[in-house]
Image (cartoon, helix red, strand yellow):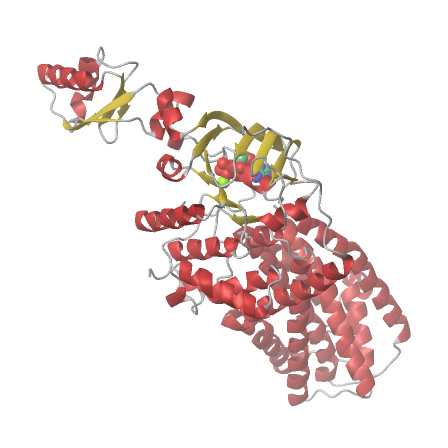
Length: 273
Length: 344
Ligand SMILES: Nc1ncnc2c1ncn2[C@@H]1O[C@H](COP(=O)(O)OP(=O)(O)O)[C@@H](O)[C@H]1O
Ligand SMILES: [Mg+2]
């Protein structure tokens, strides 16, 4: 029998049902999370970056700069710890941007996108793993803080609230970092770009010094930018003081960041080529 | 999945894709019957990777259509992903993890259970002779081993259609031959394969059909024999060790060949098409060169290589093509450090 040439188009097959897809989205995210954490524990430099560097920052500010920085109403180490925890959470997101840029360049993302796995899992797994990593950093910092004289002043509940807020703050910055990593797609550029926006944002804030010590023109920026607002909230949670206004402002800022950057990161992931 | 289609495994019609004003694909047609190997041959920048990325659902075409196993790569992308495997131009493996971990991870992402993922990984490690290195970090692998691991990863889901984008680029000759053996064994299992390459001998070795693309267009298609036929018969080739005598040699044989002699100034290799008059021409050339007093080495009569085909089709040798680097964002172009790490 001679072959009859028929149009080779097959009717579209439906995707697996919603329940199966949801289950896959979760299990794929966990698989990617597991992979990311495995990579993290295998590379000494990454451990160094997430654990040792923040600890060095604490010691540096506590013992080297601390003596020269006057703060009102509390000790410098008490003032410092919420700031350094926020700063470390923000800096931990360098890893997010760099890892995504590397995966993009090496073709890992291509491979994963060509597979029948949940497309959301690569980004979600990255955010989950990196947030977990950041959470560990925060706990270590609290421990180190306690060793060098820091004490929560405001009860256990608000101490936990501070850690939670720091983690959500870090996750928000993670979303920005994920977007930059995928949109720029080159490790070195991503790193350079990260420095350009993260350094001013974290250092020109209330993280390390009271804003009143800065020149007036700088105060205007420092007072109103989100890192200051979040860190002030964390500080009030840890040490006492009015929380409500700053908390609402923080929620608004962080919510805004999620609303803008989650879709941007997803779009950059879809487009990444 | 039942499959009632009698059509080809891959069907591409009028596919176009531009990046800004770079026309990467200008209307490509392909048809790959089930269980066969198509070699897509072209120099750097010809559009090979772009075509592969569209066929593997990574990139949206601007125009035309592409079907894989009868499914449209745009409208039915999820179904296409269930039937394909991709091994891209650089080894897409997680270097910090071991070979085994890499494959198990991919297995899990294909929604195999843990025991299934483990046994599939073990099976592939064995098939690709990576069992001894299975529990070492992949960054300690040689370039050839990394490519093998990457290829193994593309097979975890038992794809019906496999895409290999320049699977041997950057490998040393020995690793390259090993890769060829592996690719042949895959094809023997009935997998449909689309393979891109810049190496003419590779397409000749592995492919049932070859499509030559240049500047985003198919400039020739057929079997390796068909393409060689385009050059018009046999090629006579010899080396003139004394570079100063090359011009004399060329003028001495000018009347014997069909068309002009091709001279490689660097190696002193001269080749000339001699149509169907192979052995006759051989004797004439020897006489002519002897008469001109030009000493030669290694006179041989051979079937035309695909290099000759490229020359005949485009008027330039495949390797001479310059890569227009403008507009690239440096991705996947980053030459892999293939020699890094240990060799097995
Ligand atoms: N993402 C991209 N952005 C801009 N130009 C691109 C992109 N991808 C490919 N090109 C251009 O398209 C052309 C074809 O590229 P490619 O398909 O990678 O060729 P090949 O794989 O045959 O070397 C080249 O000129 C390349 O520079
Ligand atoms: Mg290519």
